[in-house]
Length: 223
Image 1 (tube, rainbow, N blue to C red):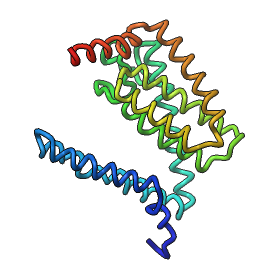
Image 2 (image 1 turned 180 degrees about the vertical axis):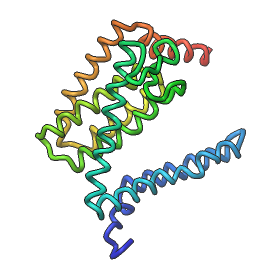
Image 3 (image 1 turned 45 degrees about the vertical axis):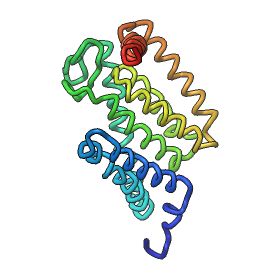
Image 4 (image 1 turned 90 degrees about the vertical axis):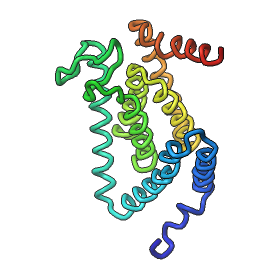
Protein backbone atom coordinates (compact mmCIF):
# COMPACT_ATOMS: atom_id res chain seq x y z
CA UNK A 1 0.00 0.00 0.00
CA UNK A 2 1.28 3.43 -1.02
CA UNK A 3 3.35 5.04 1.76
CA UNK A 4 1.82 2.54 4.16
CA UNK A 5 -1.16 4.88 4.33
CA UNK A 6 -3.69 2.10 4.54
CA UNK A 7 -1.80 -0.42 6.63
CA UNK A 8 -4.25 0.19 9.48
CA UNK A 9 -6.89 -1.58 7.39
CA UNK A 10 -5.08 -4.89 7.74
CA UNK A 11 -3.46 -4.27 11.11
CA UNK A 12 -6.54 -4.29 13.30
CA UNK A 13 -8.67 -6.68 15.33
CA UNK A 14 -11.54 -6.88 12.83
CA UNK A 15 -9.30 -7.85 9.94
CA UNK A 16 -7.62 -10.56 12.02
CA UNK A 17 -11.02 -11.97 12.98
CA UNK A 18 -12.06 -11.98 9.32
CA UNK A 19 -8.91 -13.85 8.25
CA UNK A 20 -9.42 -16.35 11.06
CA UNK A 21 -13.01 -16.88 9.88
CA UNK A 22 -11.87 -17.45 6.28
CA UNK A 23 -9.33 -20.03 7.42
CA UNK A 24 -11.93 -21.65 9.67
CA UNK A 25 -14.51 -22.18 6.92
CA UNK A 26 -11.77 -23.39 4.59
CA UNK A 27 -10.80 -26.08 7.12
CA UNK A 28 -14.46 -27.04 7.51
CA UNK A 29 -14.70 -27.49 3.74
CA UNK A 30 -12.06 -30.23 3.82
CA UNK A 31 -14.16 -32.03 6.43
CA UNK A 32 -17.27 -31.78 4.25
CA UNK A 33 -18.84 -34.77 2.48
CA UNK A 34 -18.62 -32.95 -0.84
CA UNK A 35 -15.25 -31.19 -0.58
CA UNK A 36 -15.31 -29.79 -4.10
CA UNK A 37 -18.73 -28.22 -3.70
CA UNK A 38 -17.86 -26.80 -0.29
CA UNK A 39 -14.56 -25.36 -1.48
CA UNK A 40 -16.25 -23.64 -4.42
CA UNK A 41 -17.80 -21.17 -1.97
CA UNK A 42 -15.36 -21.05 0.96
CA UNK A 43 -12.12 -20.87 -1.06
CA UNK A 44 -12.99 -17.51 -2.58
CA UNK A 45 -14.78 -16.04 0.43
CA UNK A 46 -11.78 -13.77 0.90
CA UNK A 47 -13.02 -11.76 -2.09
CA UNK A 48 -15.54 -10.01 0.16
CA UNK A 49 -12.75 -8.69 2.37
CA UNK A 50 -10.77 -7.55 -0.67
CA UNK A 51 -13.88 -5.82 -2.00
CA UNK A 52 -14.31 -3.90 1.27
CA UNK A 53 -10.64 -2.87 1.37
CA UNK A 54 -10.65 -1.83 -2.26
CA UNK A 55 -13.91 0.10 -1.88
CA UNK A 56 -12.62 1.99 1.15
CA UNK A 57 -9.39 2.99 -0.62
CA UNK A 58 -11.19 4.15 -3.76
CA UNK A 59 -13.80 6.12 -1.80
CA UNK A 60 -11.11 7.71 0.38
CA UNK A 61 -8.90 8.66 -2.57
CA UNK A 62 -11.64 10.03 -4.82
CA UNK A 63 -14.21 12.23 -3.09
CA UNK A 64 -16.59 12.27 -6.04
CA UNK A 65 -16.89 8.47 -5.77
CA UNK A 66 -18.07 8.86 -2.18
CA UNK A 67 -20.86 11.21 -3.26
CA UNK A 68 -22.15 9.21 -6.22
CA UNK A 69 -21.78 5.90 -4.42
CA UNK A 70 -24.00 7.13 -1.60
CA UNK A 71 -26.55 8.56 -4.05
CA UNK A 72 -26.68 5.22 -5.89
CA UNK A 73 -27.20 3.25 -2.67
CA UNK A 74 -29.80 5.73 -1.46
CA UNK A 75 -31.83 5.71 -4.67
CA UNK A 76 -31.77 1.93 -5.15
CA UNK A 77 -32.67 1.13 -1.55
CA UNK A 78 -35.41 3.78 -1.43
CA UNK A 79 -36.97 2.45 -4.65
CA UNK A 80 -36.93 -1.13 -3.37
CA UNK A 81 -38.45 -0.17 -0.02
CA UNK A 82 -41.26 1.87 -1.60
CA UNK A 83 -41.95 -0.61 -4.39
CA UNK A 84 -42.00 -3.68 -2.13
CA UNK A 85 -44.61 -2.14 0.19
CA UNK A 86 -46.62 -0.93 -2.80
CA UNK A 87 -46.65 -4.48 -4.17
CA UNK A 88 -47.75 -5.84 -0.78
CA UNK A 89 -50.72 -3.47 -0.61
CA UNK A 90 -51.88 -3.49 -4.24
CA UNK A 91 -50.67 -6.90 -5.45
CA UNK A 92 -48.55 -5.38 -8.21
CA UNK A 93 -45.43 -3.21 -8.16
CA UNK A 94 -45.10 0.23 -9.76
CA UNK A 95 -44.18 -1.39 -13.10
CA UNK A 96 -47.15 -3.74 -12.98
CA UNK A 97 -45.29 -6.90 -11.93
CA UNK A 98 -47.61 -9.17 -9.96
CA UNK A 99 -46.68 -10.97 -6.75
CA UNK A 100 -44.83 -14.13 -7.77
CA UNK A 101 -46.17 -16.28 -4.93
CA UNK A 102 -48.87 -15.49 -2.40
CA UNK A 103 -47.38 -12.87 -0.09
CA UNK A 104 -43.81 -13.51 -1.27
CA UNK A 105 -42.94 -9.97 -2.33
CA UNK A 106 -40.33 -9.77 -5.10
CA UNK A 107 -40.65 -6.16 -6.34
CA UNK A 108 -38.62 -5.56 -9.52
CA UNK A 109 -37.14 -9.08 -9.42
CA UNK A 110 -40.42 -10.62 -10.66
CA UNK A 111 -40.12 -14.44 -10.45
CA UNK A 112 -36.80 -14.41 -8.55
CA UNK A 113 -37.21 -14.62 -4.78
CA UNK A 114 -34.11 -12.60 -3.96
CA UNK A 115 -35.52 -9.28 -2.73
CA UNK A 116 -34.77 -9.92 0.95
CA UNK A 117 -31.29 -11.23 0.26
CA UNK A 118 -30.51 -8.24 -1.96
CA UNK A 119 -31.79 -5.64 0.51
CA UNK A 120 -30.15 -7.28 3.55
CA UNK A 121 -26.73 -6.96 1.91
CA UNK A 122 -27.35 -3.55 0.41
CA UNK A 123 -28.73 -2.06 3.62
CA UNK A 124 -25.70 -2.83 5.81
CA UNK A 125 -23.44 -1.25 3.20
CA UNK A 126 -25.78 1.73 3.06
CA UNK A 127 -26.04 2.32 6.82
CA UNK A 128 -22.30 1.77 7.28
CA UNK A 129 -21.74 4.48 4.70
CA UNK A 130 -24.22 6.77 6.48
CA UNK A 131 -22.49 6.24 9.83
CA UNK A 132 -19.07 7.02 8.39
CA UNK A 133 -19.72 9.88 6.01
CA UNK A 134 -23.09 11.55 6.64
CA UNK A 135 -23.25 14.26 9.30
CA UNK A 136 -25.47 13.55 12.28
CA UNK A 137 -28.55 15.71 12.93
CA UNK A 138 -29.20 16.46 9.26
CA UNK A 139 -32.30 15.72 7.20
CA UNK A 140 -30.33 13.35 5.00
CA UNK A 141 -29.08 11.43 8.04
CA UNK A 142 -32.53 10.99 9.58
CA UNK A 143 -34.20 10.09 6.31
CA UNK A 144 -31.42 7.59 5.59
CA UNK A 145 -32.03 6.03 9.01
CA UNK A 146 -35.72 5.82 8.19
CA UNK A 147 -35.03 4.05 4.89
CA UNK A 148 -32.65 1.67 6.66
CA UNK A 149 -35.31 0.66 9.20
CA UNK A 150 -37.96 0.41 6.46
CA UNK A 151 -35.63 -2.04 4.71
CA UNK A 152 -36.21 -4.44 7.64
CA UNK A 153 -39.91 -4.38 6.81
CA UNK A 154 -39.16 -5.07 3.13
CA UNK A 155 -37.00 -8.04 4.10
CA UNK A 156 -39.78 -9.32 6.38
CA UNK A 157 -42.46 -9.18 3.68
CA UNK A 158 -40.15 -10.90 1.22
CA UNK A 159 -40.48 -13.99 3.42
CA UNK A 160 -36.78 -14.84 3.11
CA UNK A 161 -35.88 -16.16 6.55
CA UNK A 162 -32.14 -16.29 5.93
CA UNK A 163 -32.20 -12.64 4.91
CA UNK A 164 -34.10 -11.78 8.09
CA UNK A 165 -31.46 -13.49 10.22
CA UNK A 166 -28.70 -11.78 8.25
CA UNK A 167 -30.30 -8.35 8.77
CA UNK A 168 -30.63 -8.95 12.53
CA UNK A 169 -26.94 -9.86 12.78
CA UNK A 170 -26.07 -6.82 10.67
CA UNK A 171 -28.07 -4.53 12.96
CA UNK A 172 -26.29 -5.91 16.03
CA UNK A 173 -22.90 -5.29 14.41
CA UNK A 174 -23.85 -1.76 13.40
CA UNK A 175 -25.16 -1.08 16.91
CA UNK A 176 -21.85 -2.25 18.42
CA UNK A 177 -19.60 -0.38 15.98
CA UNK A 178 -21.38 2.99 15.88
CA UNK A 179 -21.57 3.95 19.55
CA UNK A 180 -22.55 7.57 18.88
CA UNK A 181 -25.74 6.53 17.07
CA UNK A 182 -27.06 3.89 19.47
CA UNK A 183 -29.97 5.94 20.79
CA UNK A 184 -31.09 6.84 17.29
CA UNK A 185 -30.72 3.24 16.14
CA UNK A 186 -32.90 2.01 19.00
CA UNK A 187 -35.61 4.60 18.35
CA UNK A 188 -35.81 3.76 14.67
CA UNK A 189 -35.54 0.04 15.42
CA UNK A 190 -38.61 0.24 17.68
CA UNK A 191 -40.44 2.02 14.85
CA UNK A 192 -39.47 -0.82 12.54
CA UNK A 193 -40.73 -3.44 15.00
CA UNK A 194 -44.07 -1.61 15.28
CA UNK A 195 -44.38 -1.51 11.48
CA UNK A 196 -43.64 -5.25 11.23
CA UNK A 197 -46.23 -5.89 13.96
CA UNK A 198 -48.85 -3.95 11.96
CA UNK A 199 -47.98 -5.92 8.80
CA UNK A 200 -48.20 -9.20 10.75
CA UNK A 201 -51.70 -8.29 11.98
CA UNK A 202 -52.94 -7.33 8.52
CA UNK A 203 -51.10 -10.10 6.66
CA UNK A 204 -50.93 -13.06 9.08
CA UNK A 205 -49.81 -15.45 6.33
CA UNK A 206 -46.44 -13.61 6.23
CA UNK A 207 -46.07 -13.91 9.99
CA UNK A 208 -46.98 -17.60 9.84
CA UNK A 209 -44.36 -18.31 7.20
CA UNK A 210 -41.57 -16.47 8.98
CA UNK A 211 -42.25 -17.90 12.43
CA UNK A 212 -44.52 -20.95 12.55
CA UNK A 213 -43.35 -22.60 9.31
CA UNK A 214 -39.77 -22.10 10.45
CA UNK A 215 -40.50 -23.68 13.83
CA UNK A 216 -42.26 -26.62 12.15
CA UNK A 217 -39.28 -27.21 9.88
CA UNK A 218 -36.91 -27.07 12.87
CA UNK A 219 -39.07 -29.61 14.73
CA UNK A 220 -39.13 -31.92 11.71
CA UNK A 221 -35.36 -31.65 11.39
CA UNK A 222 -34.81 -32.35 15.11
CA UNK A 223 -37.40 -35.10 15.17
